[in-house]
Length: 152
Image (cartoon, rainbow, N blue to C red; front, side):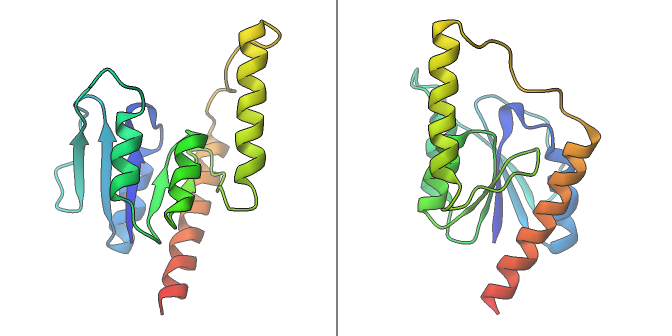
């Protein structure tokens, strides 16, 4: 089991490193530009080359993720693609996407995009809070334990 982080805008990288260290998991931070990551054998940075196409980092993650891996990202379409590969997508706010929930999430994403485009909705997500961070840590820990139980 490895953890992949959609790294360009992820607010819980440090928390992810701590959980990974506790369980002996590898973390790959995937980003479009260089980011500072701790020098540790279990943590690596993968900088994808900008090709002018959108979602280059997402494509890299999907190509490398394996069943049972964990993917940290707010990107619902990336989450959907990773679910198809047997991975466990988790948002930085602690929302885990599952086969049962991803369809509704994709539909809501499309609806909100249409509303923003028409001017009926504006703004972005609520500010990231300590309770979001706590929820993320709890859910990440639960996923690690669940995947480990299934593998035994």
